Every structure is written in structure tokens, then in C-alpha cells.
Image 1 (tube, each protein chain N blue to C red):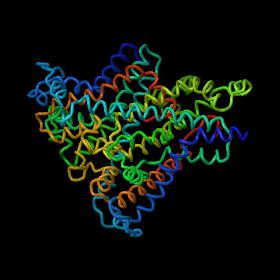
Image 2 (image 1 turned 30 degrees about the vertical axis):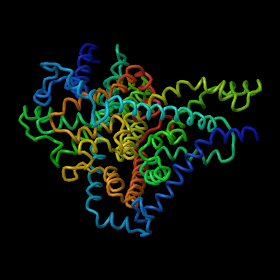
Image 3 (image 1 turned 120 degrees about the horizontal axis):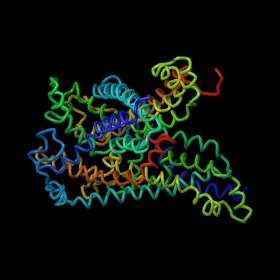
Image 4 (image 1 turned 180 degrees about the vertical axis):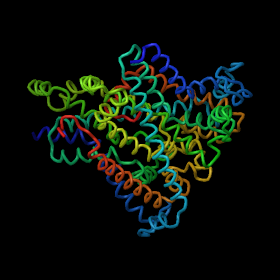
Length: 294
Length: 275
């Protein structure tokens, strides 16, 4: 026992060092820094809750970033999950080449996080780009999405939704777990495809839907690369793509307002944790766990 | 039940629409300058490798190989770090008894959800004081300290699935925890290690946020950074070379994907990896 105790700490030592020096320590430090004015070069100056006060009452760009991020999360997450579920339902039948299709649909999940694809998006959604031309061909003139405040965020939403492959494969795994007998029973009761989807598939899949919803929401709050690349780091036009993390980056690493950026990080943490709790609470009664005997 | 043929045709059509941006990217990288933004046609009318020649000739004062090398160094370093440190921690959490295991495990799980922004600035300050800003250390060193809790969890789950009898047999044969880890657990852990390695590589390769924070000197730029800077410095006429460089940046991901697609898809399905 003594021997394993010592060995255990030996095995854990990298993690313990990392957790202490790179997680717990920095968390405490960032909480402290959030109460200071700190530019990285001079020692931090204690200013109490001033960063938070300025953020909430005086900083218009902060609220712009909040608005942009909330809109981004509200549009991209449901769109992504609906696409993921739709494609999962489409692929959830034993057909030749099923595995190949599954992989092909998953590919954007890996590619889409790159700067390369963000650049493709920028070009495709620019004035005169592919999307502009296709829409013009059917009589809709937008003049490009990424250059216009009212459409720019939509291009980012599309980029996020395009990466639906990861939730899709989780949905597929969930669909496999649903017993066939349930569908057979439903069919005997005269349920059509839509009825079977609503009464069998969705309830049986609800824990997986919740899992994907929580994961994608947390993920969406932290989106960065697409917005940075599409707007060249500025979050424009007119702050329409100024996602929260992009503004945090600007404050911390362009303006060297490290205290302010730390305060923003804590607000993000509290909001993400709060939203996660709300999702779990709100899902009570909606999520069906087989074998719970309700 | 729709007929198989109809189904196949439909799925392929959806797939073509979905993969259009990728196909467009590759084909555009072979278009001459005047064709790049002038039409929807996928196939270049006069295919050319000029864009690639130009990119290989150097971007921002360094050859593309230089940036590729930087990206490779960071990614391989991160892979090594994660594979070593996460497997060590996972073995301790899954199999060994020690004081404080419960709370430590709980904390480790909690850090999976922690936005990196909360620790970003103090970490930056630490690396700055250590003189490591503008080096690859801030991108690699944390991986050797098992900060990617997600992979620790993945391996803990995997080790819990291995029969305990094997550990006990090893103990009877005189193996201590270190011997058991080396001779029993590590070989059996291979699938989880491979999953970790592949995802770490792809995520690090794609990771733009940490790289843009820590690297300022063009000689240290990774490929995504070089690409971003290149775009901001050039005019519309440089679109062709930009796409050529974008394609190059995707090549390693594409290769990993082709080689391990089954494993990647299953890894994502069983564990909720974000992809």
C-alpha cells in the first residue's frame, strides 16, 4: 500500500505540477488580476471591482461582443444539431458504404477548425464570391455577407454549422442503441415515419441530444478562429463578428489591458457554467433515461 | 424504406454540396490569377501550378517549409507530451490507491469544462517571466504536464475497461506499479494512445488561438499564422497563392484523416471529442 501510494504520486507528478502551476495558480491569479489594472509591464494596480463596473456600464464594445456571441450561439448550435440529427437519421440504415459516408460527413468537423477553411469562407461569402453569385442568380442581391454588418455573423454561423460531423457521429451511436422492437411495436400501432420519429426516436435519443447540446453550447461560447480570420482580427464590420473571445484577445493582447481581459474571462466562466446548469435543469422531465421506469 | 439506389444518389448529392468548399479550395489553388474570383466553375480552364511555385518561393521572408516545420515541431511535441503525461496520470487515477484520489479526480474532471481563457493571462505572464514568449515552449510544455484533462479521462475510461486480473497476475509475478504499467497497461492502452495522438496532432495543427497569442516573431510562425499574416498583407491578386498555401496547410490533416478515418469517427462517437 505504502509502495503504491508513493508510486501513485510519482505517476501523477506531471499532472500535479500542471494542475497546480498551470490551472489552480493561474485561476487564483486571474481572479486577482481581474481586480487590478495591469499592462504586463508595470506591477498590477488594485482597483477593486472597477473592471467589472466599466465592463457592465461603460463599455459599448463589451455589450456588442455579448450580443454578437449570444446571437452566434443561439443560431449556430440549434442549426448544427438539427443538421447533425438529420444526417444521422439519413445514414442510420444498413447500406453498403455506410462507414465511408459517415467518415465523409465527419470530415468538415476536422477541416473547419482551420485557418484555411476560414479563408475559404471569407472568399466564398465576400462580395462577388460564390455565395453572392449563386444568390444573385436566383434574384437575391446581398452584395456579399462578410462585408456587411447585418450578414457577416451569418457566414460564421454557416461555418460552425458546417462542422456538424462530431455531434452527428454521437447521434449515430445513440441511434444504434434504440431497440428495434420499439419501432416494430410503433409500426403495428399504425405509426407513420413522422410519428415514429416524434414518439420513439426523439425520446429515446434525448440524453444524447442533451449531451450534444451542452457540449456544442460550451464550444460555441469559445469560438475564435473563424471570427478572427474573417475579420482580420478586428471583429468587423461594425463589430458584427466581434465574438466574446475575440474582444477578450484584443483587450489583453492588443491593448495590453490584462486585468480587464481577466475580468472578461471570469464573466465568461460564470456564464458558461450558468448556462450549463440551466440546460441540465431545463432538461429535467424532457430527457428520458431508459430503465428509469417513469 | 426508400430504395437503396435513390438513397445513394441522394446521400452523394448532399455530400457534394457539403464538400463543395473543400473541392472549390483545391481547384481554385490551381487557377491562374484572372480566373480565381471570376466564376463558379469548379474546374480551372487553364490549370496552373504557378500559385504553388510562388508559395514555395517564400512567404513573408521564409519558405513554406519553414512554417511547415514549425507547425510540425509544435504538433509532434504536443503529441509526445499528451501521450506520456496523460497515460501516467490516467493509470494512477484508474488503478492506484492514494490519499486525495477522489477530490483530485473530481478536480481533473472539472478542468475539462474550464474555458482556457480563465487561465490564459496568468499563464502568459508565467511564460513571459520565463522568457518563453515567442518560443514553442508555451505551446508544448503544458502538454507534458497533462493539462489536456480530456485525454486523461479518455484513458481512465479505457484502463477501467481492462481486466483487473491482469494487474493482479503481474503483481504476483513480482511487478510493482511501474512494472505493471510498463508491461501490462501500456501495451493494452495502445488504441487509446493512438486516438490521443491523432486528435492531439490535428487539434494542435489547427489551433490558432494559442499560437496567435504566444508567437509574434515571423521566424517562429506556424503555418496557420503565416497564412493569416500573408492574407492581411496581400491584395486580391494574391488569392491564388493564398489558396495554394491553404491547401498545403490542410494536407497533414487530410492524410491523417484518410489513414485513420474509422478510428477518428469512432473516437468522436464514443467520447464526444469535438472534432
